[in-house]
Length: 80
Image 1: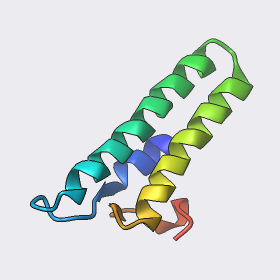
Image 2 (image 1 turned 90 degrees about the vertical axis):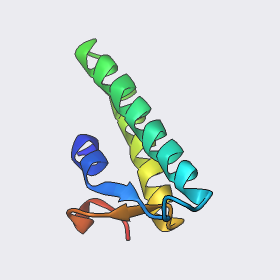
Image 3 (image 1 turned 90 degrees about the horizontal axis):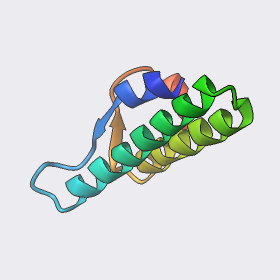
């Protein structure tokens, strides 16, 4: 689910805005936690994987709610 969600958001602020860099940071944090979760999943640590995937999803959700990320795909994946 997080993998799909990462592909369905883009920066919300205009590239000239100082907030644009912040949107990239939020997306990068979510990608980091996705990779961490995938590693735990491969190792058989299901609880650790779920925690990391959930944390990554929270970064995306926070970015959308703050207006730093914009949903470009399926809105049902987010709490907006």
